[in-house]
Length: 182
Image (cartoon, rainbow, N blue to C red; front, top):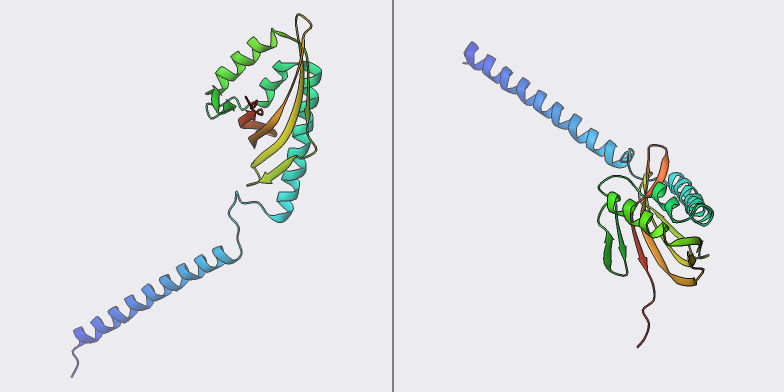
């Protein structure tokens, strides 16, 4: 015969087991729903990817127009001002941070009378999230220094564009030029 203590213990354990089973079921259901339907808040949807692609393409055209119209110092407004920014040129660290990029760009601008930047027709935009996209494009730049000498350079540009505070900026940039075959 079962004592009242044993009956209470069995009821308690079965109730405790039901609560644990219910909690486990709710947790598993939430995980399945999350994985099946909800997307990560920073992931990019197909519609979002198209929007990011269009926005970054417009950003790239704005950059080339602005640099051509306003000169090299225009770059400063398109570089991320945070410590995360860096720039590499031909495999060498040119600017390890935003402050160095701003100073270097201002110094370079003092040697240039005119600059013309043209991106190639091969612009590639790879939306990573709604806030980040990788860009890659060939480029051609004509620089006229203060003495009137003209130099034309070509190469390839890659960078990480970031959308923050309502605008796109480069979080990092890499310029490369073909090496001469000697």
